[in-house]
Length: 361
Image 1: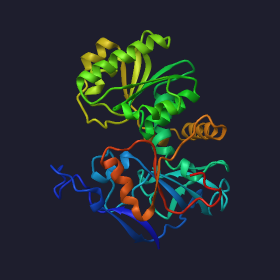
Image 2 (image 1 turned 90 degrees about the vertical axis):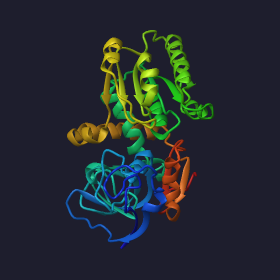
Image 3 (image 1 turned 60 degrees about the vertical axis):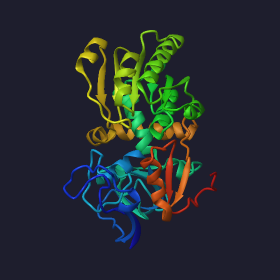
């Protein structure tokens, strides 16, 4: 048997499947249970003794029943985990290897447990000098950012990228990756207090877009002026948008150069209709950016992308950070960070401490 966090009810849905006027607290639908330990069932797979599991906004959204993937109940949350290989049926990984894994074969669930069973295709070795906690959100954050920049946005050295929600996990990861690729970055945050975070990872400019339409328009003017200062008078080449809402039409579409792209990664400000006439006049392309489906259809390219990110990590070009480490018994605190829209940076749950390297945390 093993300990695992399980979601027993979707917090935002009633018994009839309809959205509730008042959501149940996530703490009330998530429980730390004893469940059977997974077995190594197939060839080319590993069983990982989990050290850390990453939790981000999509995990909270999924537990509310509002994410695009709604797993059967009860389910174990979590896309990302790091740990040590306990058993292996592949020559690519040996018992004792320090690894990170994503549970994409299980619909992006199952990582928040003492043991995780995954295929070799979803597993990568971690450089010895990197603390395992620092890699526990690579999938949710860096995979999403890299897919948007490279696969969808076609970003190259010298490109200009606009990132909103830039103090969050995906936003900060996207900034780091864009800088590692040689691009320039304008970052947007919702409050002035959040500006320091994107600056700390290399953003060239940081502006506050606030939470109302007047501030959105001010943000638009600031970004357009910055484009000129950074040598891109026509506008940014690509927007990585995790916010959507009214910010999309009130500001973002006016910041993109003709034939540039907006990569839709999320909608933390809610979903608003996108008017095709605006896109036509602005001559811009809007693309939904979900790396999971693409990775499944293009496994070799996806693996190469992740290996490139790990190379960036190894040489220090990107430096994933941990803003809060929460012990497994207090797991609900991690979900409440995002339930309350306070999700700055990275949150990980410690299931078993990384004893393979002296902690730097």
